[in-house]
Length: 384
Image (cartoon, rainbow, N blue to C red; front, top):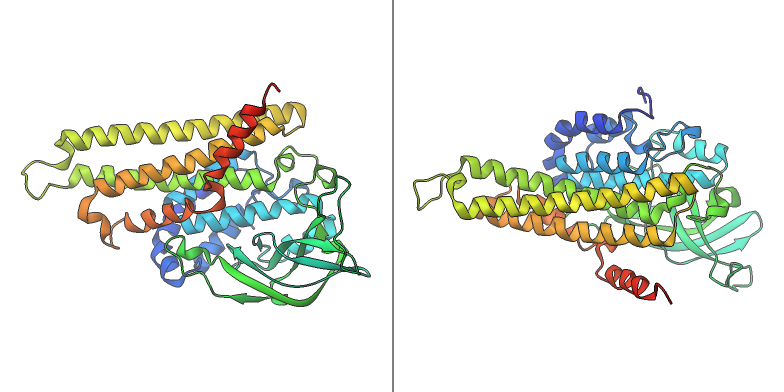
């Protein structure tokens, strides 16, 4: 990396966005990020946005990370999704011994990816053994290391418990060469993310290559970023991706409306009152969603920096804002797509891929309707 890691993440994202936009078709066809895009992300330090400063990372404030994601998503959603996934995975470094973290993140390309929590690892002398397969490993095709979140069982098969009685869950880390990757990501959108499955068989994981994820008492870093944890950081980062996709799609519809003449009328689309009104309302919806998301993130960050605590109230607020923002972004994309008419269905125009990408985003865990139920339950419990 040939740049100062803690400065200019947003500006660097903007600078490489034209390259990413030019590569977007190849990313879609190849179903993975292209070599020029991966190189640009690495050389500009974007994968290290959330890595601790003590390890040469940027340890960026949450708003900076979100804006970086938003800028990349305007160029290509798959690139932004992979970057966001792997950047947040790098937060596990805050719970690792520095020598182990450097082995993972300072050996090129220094990219970690992981999938959903699943399966068990058996405790053995010096570490753990595991045979399992995990899904949804976005960014795994660029990664040099993989991780997995597993429940721990003792040598006799008895599940280990935390002090509060909950299952002990650890994140295990291993070189990508230790796993078999399965090419399963044939999806409606986010085609370039390579969100594949990966499998290991009787793999030994030394104790030092494991960590407790999102457990404050296990942190070795004191920065406020790591108090947020990966779950809420994923939420904010992927909501920012949805904003970037929505912004680019609406901008494309605005550009089309300025230039296009309707087939049955001599007037330009820009002079159509219905189009004008739709653009105005949709622009308002997008600005409102973005303002709400960033206001929530900034309020949380301010309190976190002042108190050192990521409160349940802020966790709930982040979840609500991120979920609602993704849903609003999908509505913006839908409006822009329909506004474009038949033009939108052609692959040569900047609508149909973003339409598919946005609806793939809206199907992910970060956009589940059940999040509203969780927030509503918390609101109703207040004052008991």
